[in-house]
Amino acid sequence: MITSIVAAVLIFAILIIVHEAGHFLVAKRLGVRVLRFSIGYPPRIFGIRRGETDYAIGATPLGGYVRMLGDEIADEPSPETITGYLEELKLDLLEAAQSTGWLGRSGASGDEALAAIAGEFAGRVAIANEFDGRAAALTEPNRATTLAPVLGREPKAGEAILLREIARAGTVKLALEKLAASRPAGLIREFNQRAFPSQSLGRRFAIVLAGPAANILFAPLLMIMVFMIGLPTPLPVLGTVDASMPGYAAGLRPGDQITAVNGQAIDSWEEFSRMVKRGHGEPLFLSVKRIVKGAAATLQVTVRPRLQTVETVYGDREPTWIIGVTPSGLEATRKLSPLRAVGAGFVETGRMGATLFIGIAKIIEGATPAREALGGPIMIAQIAGKEVHQGLADVALFMVTVSLELGVINLLPVPLLDGGHLLFFVIEAARGEPLKLRHREIAMQVGLFLLAILMAFVILNDISRLVG
Image: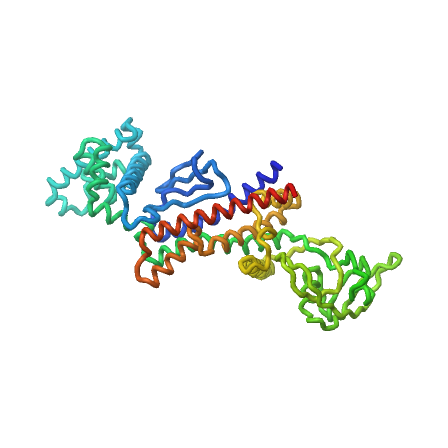
């Protein structure tokens, strides 16, 4: 059980990193400030700050998030949001001062060090103003009038506003309070340039879409790896043959290996099953390899499939052409060259994606019972543990499935999911303006309620499978 839990957590952690990396990379590429990249939800148990971002691990697994600058719903940044932004600017200044060694040489830290940097800034600005005419004639910058020795660069607009206010107010705490209350135009302008909510509609759409897209695109890459490692593939060897069905009447027996259908060579049970179902009841000409008294014999068998209502992979029942045989369970490892693996990886992922879409549609229309189709963390842990014992290829194949599911499910138009945000953007594009704040808040509350109900359902469903 511990192996199953650890396997599920690791698999989800990898797929969450992929998902959040999609949001993160596109946001950074478009100039949006990313405050935190977290694997797991709070409380934060570990983290390291690099550049503008805190990379963290939360105590609550099976989740993660990318937190960008700006309130997700509010029309205008609140005083609390501006205070948070100023705190980030404080950390930027201290990190820059640490990188030059100035922080270590000064012996100061925290707000004390920031006050010292503000003092340096105020003094150097005064020098620059006093010798403004002379400095304008210089061909090289005068380092005595800059903060380069302290920060290794010049302060950005928002940092300069913060340093100036600290020097004027005397304390960092008072400076933050005054700036949050007065909201200087220069500070708000820089905030809006880096905040997610103030980006253009196209940029916001791209950032939100990048998460599900990363999971969907990750799936064929994994599938390519699976084909290169070697995919265990069921062989077209018969396990049971129903005596009342056409296969038995045509002469097929347990242990027979189907080598060709209608002259087309096959090497997997999936190919054989697909050709039977897609034959629309037309006679099938089978080449059969049979072991007779230790010697292999090749037989030619003609069989006409029968249309019968059977249970499908989606859990519903529908008419299907069958001949009444099942696989023996014998498998062979199928390895492909890198070039062939690329094509096969994308084709197989596309087939799996189509199956997933059909399955979701059948659940929505009621053809497939949700109780049979949906599983939660317990079921996922059980499957993950089983696949770990099967081998690397099976684990990777399971990850392909889960990655596709994460990507597609996140695109569903449910508030709190990425698809819900994308729906808001589509409505905004149609209306020419965003939905009202109150309407968005209500939608988020409804989305939270629906997701809570769904999570409770799948967990109870998992428990009922265990005890039932």
